[in-house]
Amino acid sequence: MKKPVIVISPESQTKQVGTWVSSIYCSSRKYAKELESRGAIAIIPAFLSPEDADQLMSIADGLFMTGGADVDPARYGEEVQPYCGELEKDRDESDWNLMAAATKHKKPIFSVCRGSQYTNVFFGGTLYQDLPTQHPSDIKHVDLAGAFGQDSHIVNIVPGTPLHKLLGKDSIGVNTTHHQGYKTLGEKLVPMAYAPDGLVESFYLDDPDHWVRCYQWHPELMTFNENMDALISDFVNAAKENMNK
Ligand SMILES: [Mn+2]
Image (cartoon, rainbow, N blue to C red; front, top):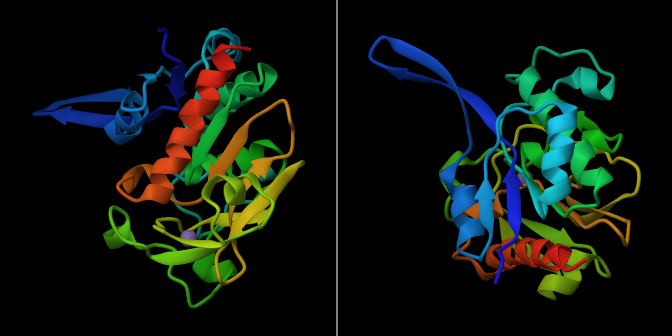
């Protein structure tokens, strides 16, 4: 049986071997591993032009938007503030091309952390450039120590949303590694979960013809947890269903 092909949004990094420094396209193995173990073929492309992203996404079955650097605030009409983090503008361009192509071809999109922030911006939303500065609360949204294995804070799930239907739970524990957050949501994006401090932590696209699910946390880092496991499987199932359309 043929497997669904899922495109993983790439980043660029500098690799150094001795005095030899090279720039590489890459992504965490964890994303690919979690997709492969559920029966998908994961591919990490180079940064693609609009035309090439369009061709790739026309034959792929899903797009995984990954974590990473902050989105350039110019993408949502703001100046860069001193408390904004590191930017990766050529990646912003690459992400835009993949998102535009996946949206045009109605391919399932699953987004985590920066990828979810980018998805929000793509649909016209805005971001807090730094939560401690612009949305102070008792919740520590950057907990790198807990990223791989503990519930750092809970989120309350909105009844009637796809997330609530999938898990059948009113609240779950999540990890949290983000210093930015969604400020306003883009067009047709509907909240699925909130942190106790009121911050939106998950949303979906309200379009019956286009499956888009976004999570501020990193489900792929704690798939031993049944809730996180279900989120990734949900995506691979959507990609499999897309193959039969
Ligand atoms: Mn959080």
